[in-house]
Image (cartoon, rainbow, N blue to C red; front, side, top):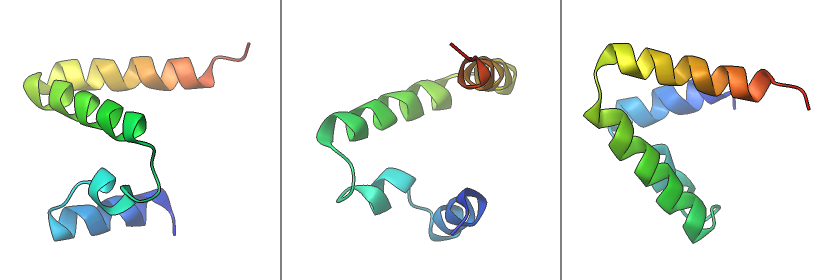
Length: 63
Protein backbone atom coordinates (compact mmCIF):
# COMPACT_ATOMS: atom_id res chain seq x y z
CA UNK A 1 0.00 0.00 0.00
CA UNK A 2 1.39 3.40 -0.89
CA UNK A 3 1.56 6.23 1.63
CA UNK A 4 -1.00 8.24 -0.32
CA UNK A 5 -3.54 5.41 -0.16
CA UNK A 6 -2.85 4.99 3.55
CA UNK A 7 -3.39 8.71 4.15
CA UNK A 8 -6.59 8.65 2.10
CA UNK A 9 -7.88 5.74 4.17
CA UNK A 10 -7.11 7.59 7.39
CA UNK A 11 -8.90 10.68 6.13
CA UNK A 12 -11.92 8.68 5.00
CA UNK A 13 -12.14 6.96 8.38
CA UNK A 14 -11.39 10.23 10.20
CA UNK A 15 -8.67 8.60 12.27
CA UNK A 16 -4.99 9.35 12.68
CA UNK A 17 -2.26 7.19 11.17
CA UNK A 18 -0.77 6.59 14.62
CA UNK A 19 -4.06 5.09 15.74
CA UNK A 20 -3.85 2.46 13.01
CA UNK A 21 -0.13 1.91 13.56
CA UNK A 22 -0.15 1.91 17.36
CA UNK A 23 0.70 -1.79 17.58
CA UNK A 24 3.64 -1.32 15.21
CA UNK A 25 5.20 1.77 16.82
CA UNK A 26 7.22 2.19 19.97
CA UNK A 27 5.64 4.45 22.61
CA UNK A 28 8.21 7.21 22.04
CA UNK A 29 7.39 7.20 18.30
CA UNK A 30 3.69 7.59 19.05
CA UNK A 31 4.29 10.46 21.45
CA UNK A 32 6.54 12.18 18.90
CA UNK A 33 3.88 11.82 16.21
CA UNK A 34 1.26 13.27 18.57
CA UNK A 35 3.54 16.18 19.45
CA UNK A 36 4.14 16.97 15.78
CA UNK A 37 0.42 16.66 15.07
CA UNK A 38 -0.44 19.09 17.89
CA UNK A 39 2.13 21.62 16.68
CA UNK A 40 0.87 21.25 13.09
CA UNK A 41 -2.74 21.95 14.05
CA UNK A 42 -1.77 25.11 15.97
CA UNK A 43 -0.14 26.99 13.08
CA UNK A 44 -1.35 28.75 9.97
CA UNK A 45 -1.31 27.10 6.54
CA UNK A 46 1.65 29.27 5.53
CA UNK A 47 3.68 28.02 8.51
CA UNK A 48 2.62 24.46 7.71
CA UNK A 49 3.96 24.93 4.17
CA UNK A 50 7.23 26.30 5.55
CA UNK A 51 7.57 23.41 8.02
CA UNK A 52 6.93 20.89 5.26
CA UNK A 53 9.59 22.53 3.07
CA UNK A 54 12.11 22.38 5.94
CA UNK A 55 11.34 18.72 6.61
CA UNK A 56 11.68 17.83 2.92
CA UNK A 57 14.99 19.72 2.70
CA UNK A 58 16.31 17.94 5.80
CA UNK A 59 15.31 14.53 4.41
CA UNK A 60 16.95 15.25 1.05
CA UNK A 61 20.21 16.37 2.70
CA UNK A 62 22.95 13.85 2.05
CA UNK A 63 25.55 13.51 4.80
